[in-house]
Image (cartoon, rainbow, N blue to C red; front, side, top):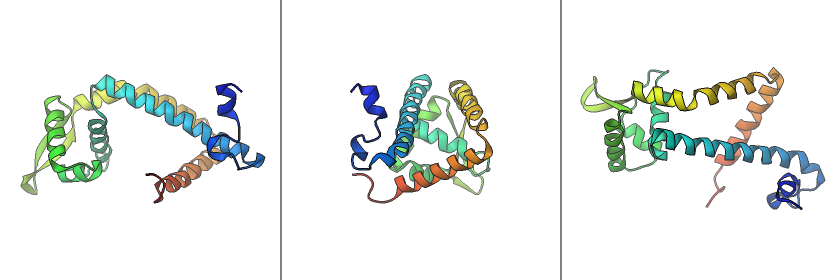
Length: 170
């Protein structure tokens, strides 16, 4: 059996005892793994394009995600979201400020504290690197009938809960 045939075989490594009726479910999970591999490749390209490490990109993602709601993020918030030490956050912010990706401003409610924002440069680089990919992803999602969109949403939400459940990794 070739590697390609094995990757499409319903009873592969994790599902050897699942039986023939599990074939479609295994194919769904294999398709999800292919998407995950493509997503990981995109993230590697983005890191190279923006000359940033994974933690810097994650920090930038959190800052950009907070903007539409008007919720400002401070260094302590970012430390919690990234799961790193406050010293590591201070180094990260210094590095990102030097490269022009993060702007720090005094918190108007507490002048001793800071608020963090993604810069125009950061937004431009993210859009340049990811804009066309997001457009293609939207076209794919919009091309599904509404009932299939709802099925995909439900599936991914349930799968997210299954993956987030305790006891899933070492």
